[in-house]
Amino acid sequence: MKVGFPSRPNAREHSTGNTEINTEMKILGISAHYHDSAAALVVDGVPVCAVQEERLSRHKGDAAFPLLAIEWCLDHAGIESDELDAVVFYERPMLKFDRILTCALRAFPQSWRTFPQAMRNSLGEKVWIRGIISSHLGVPGRKILFTEHHQSHAATAFLTAPTQRAAILTADAVGEWATLSVGTGERLPHGATTIRSLREIRFPHSLGMLYSTFTAYLGFKVNEGEYKVMGLAAYGQPTLVEQVRKLIRRTPDGGFALDLDYFEFHTTAKRSYSSRFVELFGAPRNPYEPIDFDTTEGQRFADCAASVQQVLEDTLVDMARALHQETGLPDLCLGGGVALNGVANTRILNESGFERVFVPPAPGDGGCAVGAALYADRIHFGNPDREIPDHPFWGPPVDGVELARLAREDGRFVEEVEEGALVNQIADDLAAGRVVGWMDGALELGPRALGHRSILAAPHAADMRDRLNHEIKYRESFRPFAPVVPIEVADRYFDLPPGGTRLARFMSGVFPVRHEWQSRLQAIIHVDGTARLQALEPDMAPRLHALLEAYGRRSGIPVLLNTSFNLAGEPIVNRAVEGYSTFLRCGIDVLVAGQTRVIKRASPTAKLKEEIACSKGVAGPDVD
Ligand SMILES: [Fe+2]
Image 1 (tube, rainbow, N blue to C red):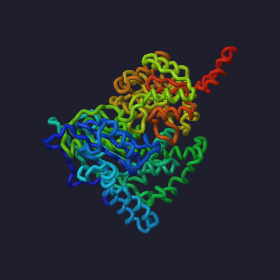
Image 2: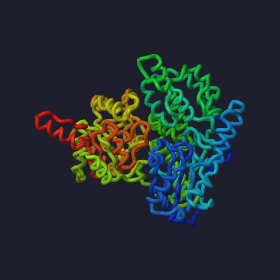
Image 3: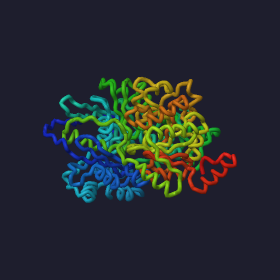
Image 4: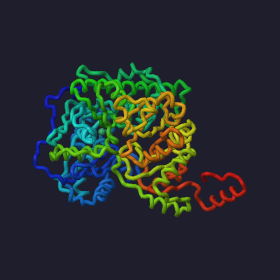
């Protein structure tokens, strides 16, 4: 097996030279069976819709074949499956099976217990994906295409970014064999597209697996808890960097290799770290016990997080710097789940030499549905380049009328308000300290709420952060909340380097809060003085932008706390009914969808009590 970063004798170059162009092609992209399944539809070279299966099935991280997502995409676009020109799966199942089989055989006899399960998992529908697609959609096998996993990540990152030429770096846990790839992308003047893979690092040597091993060791759920490790890192010191460096060594060719003695993820699904890992770092954290930073144990876990975070950042910065020197290009497109690490992204922007760093709103596997479809369109079919709308809102729209009906049926206080008045009313709510569930337009693709399915609140006092953590999100108190700010004034409140607003477009970077504003932005500032802000352009989410301005006129600071509209363990809400259900089950005070505003002063009895209380000169309850 290759380790490190071997140069590949046949550096792959995929380019379009085809002059027969079908400008009306309808291509369905699918990602499934690892985590975060999704479907996306590309028509005439442009995405028209995309959605993750979890948002429809309501099963967080749903990895099932995304039938609901496919059905919604086809319905939304008004096309039948037999009208599709191609269905593209985001990885090559047989290559993945080859990796699983090879690793299981290599690990024998340690793997003998898990081997049957691994084979069952792989030999199920995961391998026979062509048949699954064909039988579900009635699409003939010849129309079903496959891209490599990291090609899909690269296409998502490059083809959705507003750049003509860029270096591309993708990194995740693992696809088929690749765990990290570097290359370049170019949209040529005559309309053709090239995506060139220069090198890749292969399983089991993986930055994503290194980080997720620490995620598991620190008691968090792999593929979900990586955010928590990044948040925890700010509470620690990188005192264990030398120990982490025993786990990953840099290779002379600029790559890296893991010391597999410290890991078990490549031999068993039961545990990702080995006994030797535990000897080096101490006992793993019990997931059911809270982290207390006042104890030696709690500080050790924070230091572990800080140390692996630093090693991850150092490695990525180093590799990005080498890629910049090699390509001489000013732009870098980042893809793969590792690109969700905003702290690392910011260091790459600041230290690698690239002037602009683009991270798509869904750099992980969910976004690969878009990338796979675009890759097939541009590379396989050779269709001309098209400008891709630069936003994350590809999912189902929300229906304010539905919300009004639901709330009225429950006797809630419902207002249907004209647009300008609504924005002002919500700004008043926020200024009065109310927490707002905000639903607007089409659902975001990707893990972040970027203005269409958000919980919004005043960002000023630490009390608000604690209230959101304890009454609404029910999550660990060490996790920070993010702010949203109009792009025009982002630099006033946050210390942004050149290129920083681009990275902040989809909340992909972490930047210092300016010192003079820190005391007035306590709810969104992390313990290290930073924030993972979204710098919002008016065109991207006009209503939220208007709300920020209206709130700024009231508070003097046009910044809001913006966190995803979901409760712990649940996917981000999609339809009005899910927003309404979430609203009822937590401490959100006001819910908005379309022109509808609902508040929790609901039942006629409660309203009557309040009116009686008011008539007696006693302040009535604001919420029930
Ligand atoms: Fe991936």
